[in-house]
Image (cartoon, rainbow, N blue to C red; front, side, top):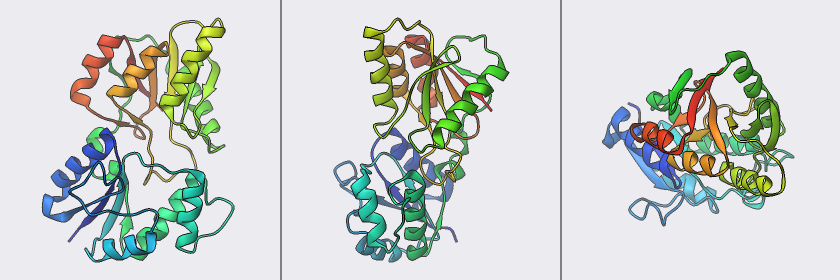
Length: 263
């Protein structure tokens, strides 16, 4: 019998994952635990700063699977302390790959198999072609080229997103995330002659397994993109989560931002 321990951060993805998990597995087979207790005061706390004790508490529920969903503060020092607290040492402890290693070891100690949100919420995954918003004339080969460049950027472990003017890269995501990237692009537009109609491209880092931080787009992404002069969001089909889909098209039309899926 499948039983999921769902470790919940903040944001739309956490709430969407909780709902999808309860629908997929049944509410009685999902144990929610709060990575952000202020967001989930009704749930037991899974304390990232006390992993040995958090593992004991999670193991007590005897889950068969474990999943992490939502935003959480993962500064380099916190990543390093998390890894060290469970005996994982190495030069990659603070990288996203290192976080996946830490999560894998946490799951092993809990006695559960690590899985990603997409494995029980497949309807959140982006498809190919025009998905939401105003119609866009695009060449699939160029879209593939932009995705390839973004994946290559992701190999540096900086981020999953880049902003392009045509096929020229303008800026890449860093530890601050996509919102911070778009804010930087907005600032650049004040001092540089940047054309309108920018593209935001999001792709999974090649070194990531997908059980953790898949690229995600939601309503807030559309609003921030529009403010930064982005007219198209290109996502990696089958590797990107699209949240609030019942409202995405309305938001895209309102802000004149299209979402397309490529490979």
